[in-house]
Image (cartoon, rainbow, N blue to C red; front, side, top):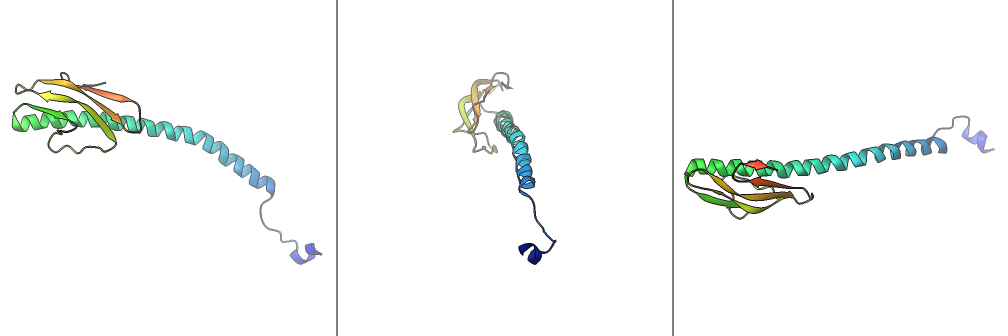
Length: 126
């Protein structure tokens, strides 16, 4: 009786079709989520490393402008340097009146455990 009321025009998906779609979505997300987390961690590490490089460049630019010795740290940033709120700093870099630099600073992203050390004497970041 219900078949006559509905007619032969049945629409919709079967249960097996819905289960296959859900399984495919599950497989794709199992592949995509670890990749996304890996890319995010790499981005955070790159952010900290770039911040160290920019900090050193800004410190040297300020020395070139003023010509006087100065110690730079998280509390005493170079002029024109915009601090990234997600990157934590520790240590001090000192630029002497001769232009020689000394000291070390450590840069770490707040959501990452990788620390980058800026060596003042060479300007290298490791």
